[in-house]
Image (cartoon, rainbow, N blue to C red; front, side, top):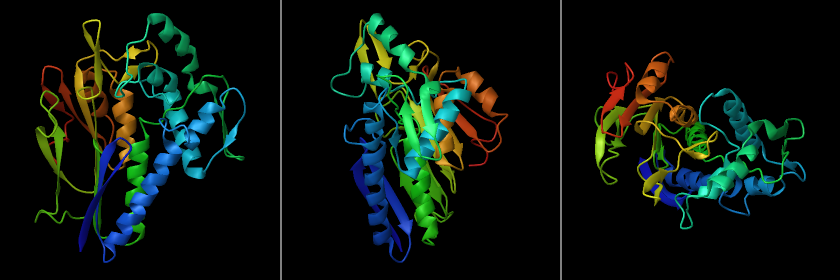
Length: 307
């Protein structure tokens, strides 16, 4: 029997479904784990373990649980090798603008220049043996927002599979991971809508039909502010301290693991749409759909054909 439920967490509504004789029990455990993840990984909760690391920047190393260490270690590696926008040390810049929150603002050039030296993933010191994290400079802050939901999605689906569930999904708002057959379609395929960036939420530009895959979408169309006659969105270039400027309105990555989708959407959002497609056409098992600011759509060679 397929059971489905939702919970409000992490600034969104998270939906889960699972096919299992004890589906309600599995969903309860999934939501308990997600609640624990929020308490551990949140950059917006002063009581979280991640914020304990940030609050001790320049003071001391903090010992952390295995999962938090794992994601920070992975995030640091990707931040140093991405050649793109992914940078888990971007916390001070995120807090300065705070787009998506009531106190969002366009900071002065001077304030932006002051935080730029703090946004350096090289200065995240990790001790794998002791499982400690130390931010070497006071004022540094890790923000895992670019990676965390994908990491959580993979963990929850792995839990469902470990309990011998036959199918399931998790939807963290802009991040969907599925496995097995959908109970809502005789084809067994899951229908996943891609938001039209030019229209209010709930209006799809297209609907994908797939299974055993993740769909992660990043876009500039929801979290934004207006200042000085301009619109500023929440996806930042940590070299300039300002939101990225290019022709992208949204980037969707289709992959087996949700974390891979998070990594690639963040790494590539600083590039132009054509560059994104060109680069990902050479990466196996990663497909992309881009929608530009003038509402044009393009995809990698296999992104639409196989669905």
